[in-house]
Image (cartoon, rainbow, N blue to C red; front, top):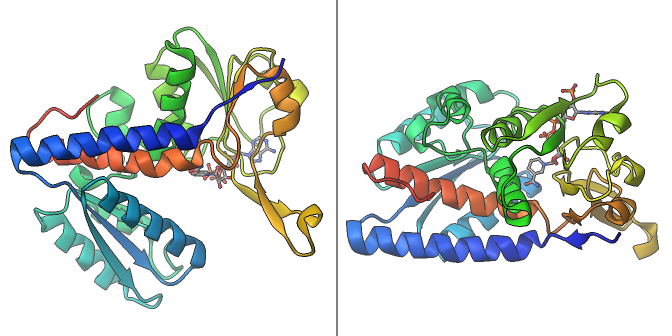
Amino acid sequence: MTAKIIDGKAFAEALRIRIANHVDRLKSQHGITPGLAVVIVGTDPASQVYVSSKAKQTAEVGMNSFKHELPADVLEAELLSLIAALNADPAVHGILVQMPVPKHIDPNKVIETIDPAKDVDCFTPANVGKVQIGLPGPVSCTPLGCLMLLRDELGSLEGKNAVIIGRSNLVGKPMMQLLLRDNCTVTVAHSRTQNLPEVVRAADIVIAAVGRPQMIKGDWIKPGAVVIDVGINRVDAPERGEGKTRLVGDVDFAAAAENAAAITPVPGGVGPMTIACLLANTITTASLINGLVPPS
Ligand code: NDP
């Protein structure tokens, strides 16, 4: 079998068009322009790229984009007071502080300071709890993107055996909640899991979120499984020239594609979905803040 390649880039583009339509409706029917504030501390080049791309896509769907750049040595208290000001600003419906923050700033304090009503990353305990008990609110962006791709591929996920490799607060744990909500039977594997290949071989759905290049081998994949590769790993690519690198996922893509029914590539799979889901969450928070039912 040669797997279908799931085109996350195209899916994310289509999602952004739907989001732009929601933005138009919020503006024309309710006089609300959703606003997303992005805060970046320091000059880490990867973070700068993410933040610019978030700001650009926010503006492209018709939302207000507010970018706050703080120096790497900013006092924690100054960052927290900026967040408090954004909490109080009625033009801001979503607040994102780009992680990681410099070592002298406590990320937990940053997260605790963000008003859960504007927590579009779904990092605050209040929103993590809402996802767990199924209340409306923002949902962790990367897992939400994975869920959308899976539903698009499979329709109903009910009764499927899903194995998630990785149990981080960012990806693995919220992914578990979302798949449970969709009536999958969920196994969460991690670094202490025994006999991982056998665990993965039982899966109809494999979500790889480990951060280890091509760790999940092709012969671990059950024939006909759907594979979602969250991993983003930069590896040397001498075939492209001296000192060159390329991105690979956590799955050995070529070998896994021989067994899987469908698989996401890296890049071009889950990655593009994450920012689109951030925008979707901003529609959700802008709707809820204004007493409206968010689009499903
Ligand atoms: P973390 O490092 O926080 O978590 C990694 C998880 O993998 C941990 O639960 C760890 O287990 C588990 N793990 C590590 N080694 C093994 C092993 N040998 N066998 C089984 N499990 C193992 O990573 P994140 O969840 O933040 O990210 C995972 C990957 O996804 C990274 O490559 C990251 O870059 C990427 N990513 C991509 C995004 C996107 O937009 N596409 C967004 C977010 C992340 P334990 O808990 O026991 O230590």
